[in-house]
Length: 252
Image (cartoon, rainbow, N blue to C red):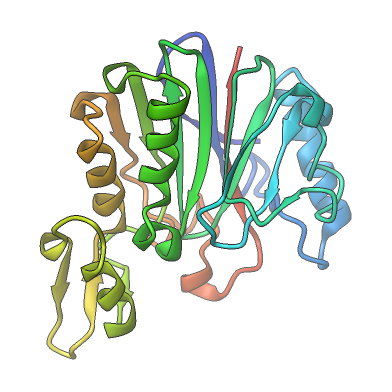
């Protein structure tokens, strides 16, 4: 299975899965009632490749909320064998436990990973446009700072492969919500001749982190666009794909 790494520190591992493997076989990672048996096979293959098993991985059933949950090794396996036993209605997780992989599903939405090096805490966040305008990344990061005693100067972040601003066309309904965010957002969208807008969702997420005093050089923004890089990623906007990539992180 082809993986795109986030190279941060030796004590963590983090990757994004690609849509196709070395043999050009589909690598869907999300149950969708279409190819669920193959999805389970893909997940087991990934776990083996990472020298672990599904009992050391955990996933939520994402619903575009701003809810997050702390998980531990005892939660390993949840959401791995079926969707029904996942943590339902959470779009972010964090853990202090080692050897537990946190998953985020995405196809155009933005996966965000955090590593709080001082407290040895990792987090994954699913930030689609609904989560972005509701500032889920800021919400999770602020919780880690205020409640888990993570210092901003020791937090590292990865804004993963997702739709880039050149391809994120938004209408007034989304832009109205962008304008209602807690900081000045006018520089993150531009109006086109047809009246629609191009929206920089990665930029909005980056700004949420900067507003919490995360150093800019601690934040990696993936250059990959899920629409443009058709050979690497699934994209709902491009072709209504029911398939999903995952971005995942583990503290060794």
